[in-house]
Image (cartoon, rainbow, N blue to C red; front, side, top):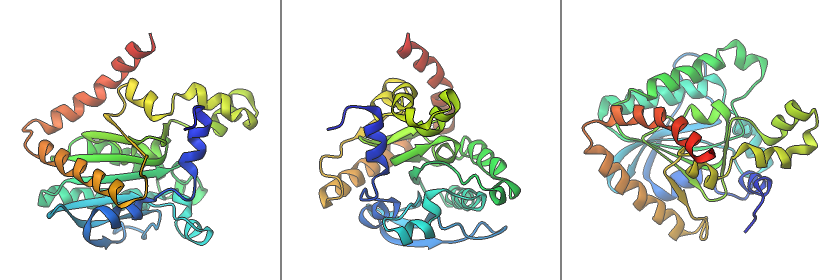
Length: 264
């Protein structure tokens, strides 16, 4: 098992890791994908639709990177455009209308930062997701399965429960980007990674996430079955909570205080 923070980053980026569609296909049944944001286009970096979790309907949304070079190019390397976030929000609002829990799988280095994405309102699309997810009256569970980069990841992570795989990372910026800003030298990425507190263990200690999922059997049938049972149990518990929105609000208000205490 790797110990350094940058080793965790490399593991999180490994193209052989299961992607969002791998989780959807192995955990859920009868997945029906839905397309488009009803404004501009369909973004291939975000996959979403309706599926069955342990016999009950759920809305599933995943940032998809792909495995091969061809797949990664088609999925824009898991960097969503604004229409991807708007598609996700459309599906989440639909889930609220029909009383379905929402499960999100996150794996992105960040939202796409090309000029066309900015022209179509990338920042606004992310901000709308953050705002709307705070008031959705159905359970939301988000799992970071690889990279969790900046607002591009947070746009699907304003949830009642946020979990991370053991070798996933969650950070406001990539180590390379941080090193370029602080030291004008991207080769200091390993040093930056250590300072960013981006590992699952760091996030748990800082109160950012609730659970770390072991990767001892990653990709195997038992691995997906274990996550399915965890999800089913958590959805059942959250569905019976009469103060879901209030507790979700309190969860995020508490993170800063928890982080300060952990760092002191």
